[in-house]
Length: 188
Image (cartoon, rainbow, N blue to C red; front, side, top):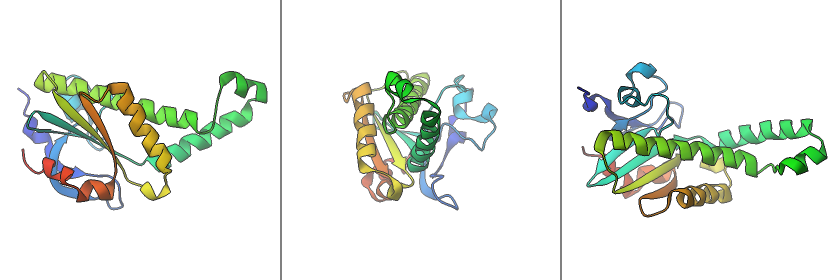
C-alpha cells in the first residue's frame, strides 16, 4: 500500500541560492534530487511522464505548482535557436517559418503542456476525478523576463486546456509567497 504522507513536505522553491524553502507543505511529485525509484510519480507507476513539482488538494480543488527559471530557459533556447539559424541559409529559414521569438516560446509552452497533462493524469491515479484545478507557474527570475512572454504562456496554456476545469496563474516567486494562494498549502 502506498503511504502518500511520506511525500508531504515543505515547498522547496529551488529558486534562490540557497533555495528558499517555504513553511507551507504540499505533496512533492517530482524530485530531481531523489532517486527516481522513490518519487511519488514512480510509486504511482508514472515515473516517465512530465509533471509539476507539487500538488495540493483543497476542498474539491486541486492546485499544481511548477517552479521555473523561465528567463534562463528562454535565453538558452533563444541562443541555441540563433546558432541553428546561423547554420541555415535564408531560404531554409523562410521555408521552415522560423522566428527567434516563436520557437523557444513554443518549446517552453509545449514543455508546460506536458507537465499539466502529466499532473492531471497523476491526479486521476490518486483521486479518480478532477472538478477544478489551478496550475501555478511560478517564475524565479522575473526581473529578466519580458511581460509579453509571460502573458503569452498563460493565454496559450489556458486556451489549450480550457478554463472550465483548469485555470493557469503565472506568478513571480514574490507574488506566490505573499498572496492568499499560499494559504491553500498550509493544511492537509
